Image (cartoon, rainbow, N blue to C red; front, side):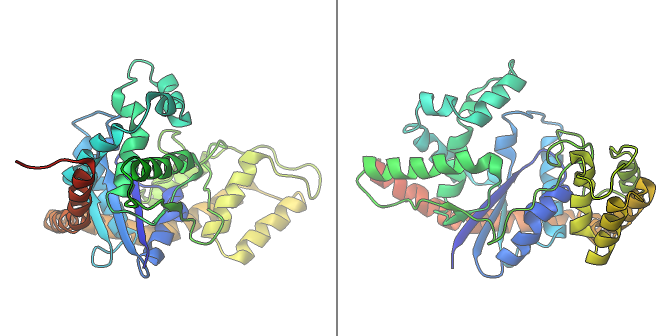
Length: 329
């Protein structure tokens, strides 16, 4: 049984891209692996240090996790800041992480460019904290998107470096886990890149039917094709990409045929797309509304999750302290 770890930053609610990109697979993954799922509230401080929203955002992600099917009886679900062992390991790993390699990561350079007035130490050492999240449980596999591949490779490097420096074979070198399939990338409704909160182009799992209809109706389109079997522009292909994951094959074929024969009516396409998205998200939304009111249940999940996570985390930290030479008088 593999140890699998995954985390989502607590910067808001989860959207359709999260669901098809990861959450569906997480629910299957937990059946045959020992899975740790955490809510990365410390990571969020590197770019979103808002004390008024921090707890609310953690709760939103936790509720969405549970509503989407992650089962606390089968998996370990915890809040990153509840596991103090992670921050201790983060400190120790920083002693073997070098300024040159940290400052060259693409995510650091991008974030430093976007927030020039807040280039903090946490932003620089983000890969080290991510490594601590993974190595604290000595994970075998980590589900990561394309934007996190470099950080996972750095985790492998830190594990090798620690083992070599202290002449041990303690940390595993975790590998990316793509569920055995090509990863699904859900595009945004504005015709640009992937769906995401910061891009403002997302449909959230908690959105009401009216909100979904309104968002889909605003999706970017044009006057339609003028030649049969023509290539779709990216912003139109995006709508079809979403259609393929929420609709039945016959519905997809119908609208493909309408495009290829220059008979496409975007109003009909958007109406169908909104209806099928609502069919997918409505059961999840109903569970969200039920779970988010049950504070006792959420408290129980996080307390038990932290306790379970601490079993492996405390062992790792104790082992690392001993390997590094810390001794009590």
